[in-house]
Amino acid sequence: MDALAQSLTRDAGDDDRFRIELPSDLARVGDVVDAACACCFPDGRESRRTRFRLCTVLAEAVANAMLYGNHGDPALLVIIEIAVGNEELVLSISDQGDGFDHTAVPLLLGDESLEATRGRGLYMIHRLAEHVAFNERGNTIWITLPRH
Image 1 (cartoon, one colour):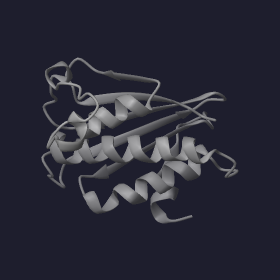
Image 2 (cartoon, one colour; image 1 turned 30 degrees about the vertical axis):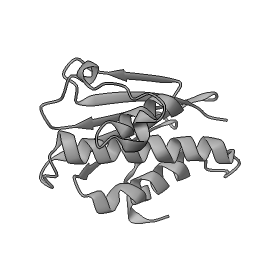
Image 3 (cartoon, one colour; image 1 turned 135 degrees about the horizontal axis):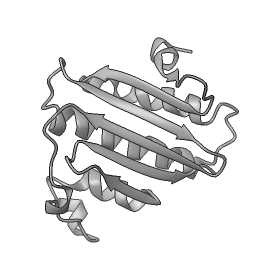
Image 4 (tube, rainbow, N blue to C red; image 1 turned 90 degrees about the horizontal axis):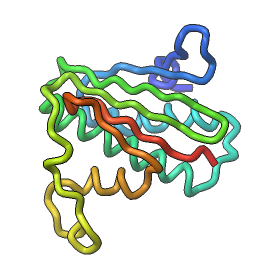
């Protein structure tokens, strides 16, 4: 297990909750996705579709938090929390930025997503997740995915 996976710590007293804080460094997005997969699917028996959904939404949400929330400032952290249930995964990704109004970002439809220069990450998250919610400030996103 690599250093990032080891730093994805279990919350005290709860074997099914994990947390990691990392600086805004896009080079770490793949590492955090790999670490999350190791925690969410320790037996490696998940479907390819489930793994794809987790990898895609987590990579998009973490990259958005780093780029848009924290404006690429490595002094600002992104906090990832994962709750692993029998039937679902709940991801929480928070940045230390000012937040944004998620309702002001138009959800792309169909072919619009192919040519858009912004909003594609949120489009993919909404398409792949069972449920998406934001806090009022707009600096935390919760994403619910099926585990199987």
